[in-house]
Length: 403
Image 1 (cartoon, rainbow, N blue to C red):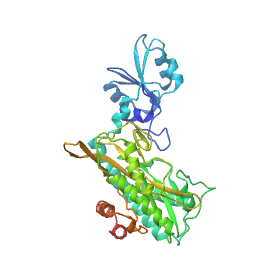
Image 2 (image 1 turned 90 degrees about the vertical axis):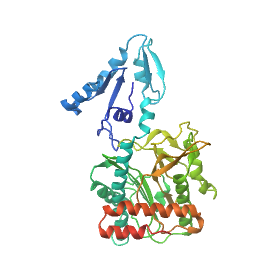
Image 3 (image 1 turned 180 degrees about the horizontal axis):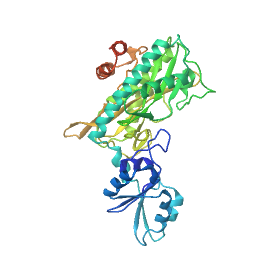
Image 4 (image 1 turned 45 degrees about the horizontal axis):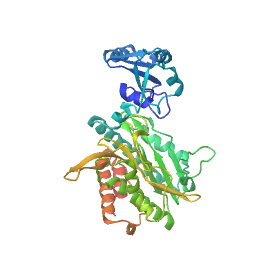
């Protein structure tokens, strides 16, 4: 039995609009050796779509019939059920004589490893998203101090640029648009009551993402809006150091997320600074922006990274009442090398959008980190400039100049 909506969407290759931001369909499934029953509102499918599913061994049944189906499972049969992704009431419907095998849905591990087609399409989505982000950053830099910009109006402008991209479906989560002290709240959500003006000073944090037919994006950039303090510049550089180290790490096969988490935090730990959230989460393929089973956080999660897994790298610094800084890229695990010691993996940066260098304290960076930053911004210009107007490309060229 499978009831987690992202697993069902991936397994049957369907997407819907039943949940905000997540393109899933309310449904359940019972899968046997040679047949599957998909329980959902069948009015959401055309007759041709139902026929296509049926030809592939999938029978569409009414959503409410799942309860009867569970209660009538054959005596002394077996059912595989994920205890973390099913409700207790449905577990109790299963006859006592039925053997219950409790473990993680097999589909959870399978969908975490993207195939070549999914990865190539995701790269297309990242380029489109990068164009939208670039246009937003250009607009912000040119309008700040000239027109009134608030947290909510900035988020609306970013969505407008995303919506102009072919294949855009919607936001992948509620945009975190946080100016100054609001940035110190990692999961801040601007409202009519909390909305403040973004002024030409200090730091502005924007954590946002898009759902495209090509894939799912999630990106954070912290933008200096004008004059900044020494503390803001230092914190920004330390977060950037951590993000770079997390993105450029090489690691042996079998490495788990908590090891990447520690490597990413170290530049901050060296200055007795830490952050209270995970370093990264898995990301779906035109699916949920948060996807397992891999995760980068201090918890000793035993899931090892595999090639094709897409994960975020997003360290931060949060000073209550002052500012918050977070910089985030999505990365794909790739095979780097193989020798007598092990198979070695690395990360391919999927996110393609400029990282501001305006307030970087270069003396805090090692040469390898400077090289990574310069190479990354050069790649951003190379990938995005053909998609931009001449004026936009000129702005991006200046924004991505090597330090």
